[in-house]
Structures are given as structure tokens and as C-alpha cells.
Amino acid sequence: MPHRELSTGEGSSQRATASGGFTNPMPAEILKRALATDPTPRTYAGLREVASRAMIDAAVARGEVTRLLPNQYCLAEYDESWAMRAHAAVHWAGPGAAVTGLPALAVRGVAPAPIDFVQVAVPAWRHRTGPTWLRVRSLTMPYATSTWSPRTEVTMPDLALVLGYGAVASRYRSKLLYGSLRANLVSPTELRELAESLTRVPAKRELIARLKRIEAGAESFLEERAMSEILRGAVFADIIFQHRVRVRGERARIDAFHPATLTAIEFDSAEHHGEPENRQSDVNRDALLASIDIETLRFTYLDVMTRPQWCRELILEVIATRANRASRA
Image (cartoon, rainbow, N blue to C red):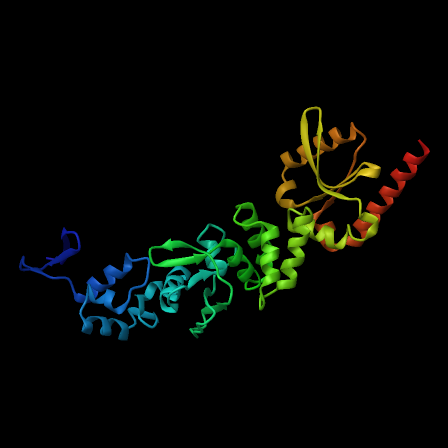
């Protein structure tokens, strides 16, 4: 008769034997079961609540339980989880420590990049060195936190983004920044002021420059690129970004508007303008704007990214033509 496991109540299971008797589950199984359902690491004392010292030491020696940090243990299968590591790092770092950077934004639902390491903020007087997956940032300024779990604090989103922005690969930074803005976790002005006040901020100049463009009206990476590479210089000083108009009861928002010549300039991403229904909406909107003499110029993502000078020259040519036409009218 084969062995079969029967549950006899919460926290217990017994194994039926061929003779019809029962034996208690193996000690290692009890420990692994307890850790498998625990989303946070345990201290050694916490392990001792479910297992003997000999059982724990044997499980660690066999590689079934991992010591993430001093006095922070988890099931080996979970030892690469950023969440498990973040909890362990804060407990290990001591009073006042808080998760920051990308993990602190992921806790709030913004996670556009792989979390390959954990960032932890600590008070200035505390310096600690950990494993390669952990980065500890000592801060002289006071920083506010919110509670992630009963024993784990996270910094507020603005500090998390400023410290985490330059720590991720360049290809993820735009999604990280705009994801946080669209989730209303941060404001560009407060972010910029915070970044300017801190030292040793990775990619600080890049972040501040981007935030200034966002404050000026950019709402996407494509529009930022257009601001820095196409609509630059005194000749475009009168441009109004995110200009709003209402025609025949319908509202339209123009990426960049040149009021003197009634010229609308649109920068179309494939994400928001590539589908047939989006294109039809664009055509209808351009026709409405034309009814009040606003001419629309549209540039694709490829145009902006690969030939910004061509875009710039074409815009200047259209503006000059419309200005001359208006002066002769």
C-alpha cells in the first residue's frame, strides 16, 4: 500500500504507513512549509519558533534555507526576490532605515524595470556594507516614510525616484519617470527641487534637465526630445506647449502651438497614434482645427528620433510661409 499524506488540522500533517499507523512529518518539512508561506524573512529567533537549533543549522548547511543578511533568513527558493531582500535589508540596517529607489516605487505600483538590487536609506550617522545586491544610502537630511508592512518602512515617492532614477538602465528611465507622474505619486517641480538639493545623485543633471522640460509642458519622452532637439532657440520662444482649444464644442490639446502663425505641431508616438481609430481621430481633429485656420504639422517618432534637423527646418519653413501670407492679407 503506497504512502499517503492526510491533514489532521491546521499546522499538522501525518504520513500513513503500510501498517496503518501514522508518523509525524519530517522536521525539515515543517520548517520549509512555514517559510514557504511567509512573505518576509525571519530572524533566527523566529525560526526557533517552528524548528530546533539543529534542524535550522542543518537546513542552512544543506542550502534549503538562506541567510540573506545577519539574522535574516528565508527559504532558498525566495532568496532572489527583491521584496524578500528589501524587508531583510531594512531589518538589518536598523532603526530609521527605509526602502528607497525602485523597490519603494514598485511597492506603490510603478515597476517598469527589473529590480536587480535593493536600495535602503539610513540616517547619516549609520554606515553599513552589505552584499552586492544591496546599496545603502546615508542621508544627512530628514526623510519621511510610510509603512509597507508592520516592520518595514519605505521612503516617500519623490526621494525614491530621485535616488532610483539614475540607478536603472537608460532605456527604463522614461517609463519610470512618467509612470510615477501619471500615477500622481510625484510632481515635477518638487522632484527637481529635491534633486537639486541632494549630492551624489546618479544622473542628476539628466534628471533635472528632463524635469525642466516637463515643467515647460512636455508630457512624453518624444515631446522632451522635440523640445531639446527641434523647438530650441529664440526662434521658438513664442511656442505654447499643451495649448488647449475648443472647436464646435470639441476640445483639442496641441503639443506645440505657434500663435503668430496659427501653426499646430504634433509629435505622434506609435503607442498613441498607430492604430486606425487613432489615425481617424487625428484626421478629424486636424480638420476641426483647419476650420479656424490652424494648420497642423505632424511628425512621427521616427522623424523626431532620426532626423530632428529636418523636422526643425520644415517647421521653420511653414512658419515663415504662413507669416508672409498673413502679412499680405
